[in-house]
Image (cartoon, rainbow, N blue to C red; front, side, top):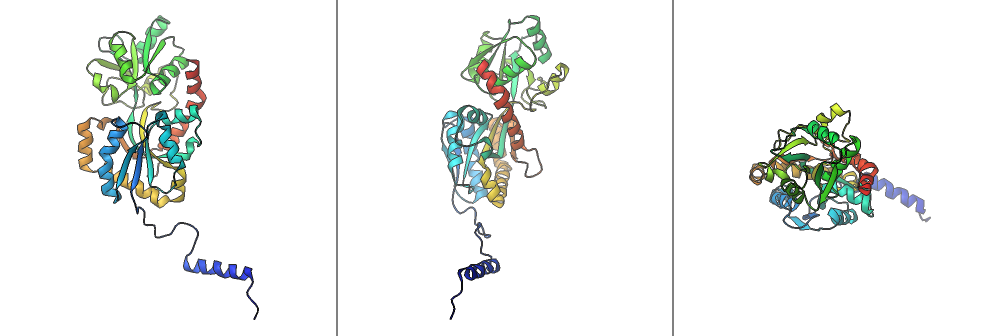
Length: 341
């Protein structure tokens, strides 16, 4: 009897695979999750990102149906954790909590072994916009007052910032695009920068809206770098609106705001869209839990909470696209300004 040819055997296997549903792709009956979820916070214990993740942890476990392990992996402004994520399996069992635009600066300036688009923001937790603030007794009441004073006395005034971040970037970008002559004084932290203002060492400070709520009774905001008012600093009109009179427009509306985001590999979303959707639903349900909302209210972070899916899956604002646009601005405009000082 003549033996069947190899090609015939391969054809038969193909037909059987099609008949029985055998494929090389992931099984249709996906039992995700079948083990614990790992969330890596890219900063040390006790910081804002660490506290918010650990606050959410038990509500995620309730919805995920498995243990959620939170660990800290500090270093290089979150880039160490992001590198670990980039090297992990694209299966939906590892996420990171890393701030944007700090992550963008790390990619541009440190050239890690992956690109910015390799990781995407699955869930955006908080938005902490930049404010321009002065002491309560200052005669300036809005951004136009600040601009007029600086233009009337070039080189006289100074502003403080936390070095090499969103505050510093705003100070540099506005100085360049409005042709202003003021001195920028960098500090190691936002707290130090604000204390310099209170101590009379500078005339204004660029700070984070939520972080500077601790000085609310001592400061007033001239502008919020956003397109909408901020509940903590209602007197500070949106800078996006205030810049219209100068015929200047911010690159993005909440330019250089600190976004707290949970990141996953872009490959995971492409390979496992159903798992991605389930993960989004888990975060949505966890952050909608009344007990979680009560804890957020007590902790004082409620004004900064967004808690929205990051890639526009539900037809909302697409933070992934916005971050990518701002990344290109950071790469082409902001980092060169840092280098020029």
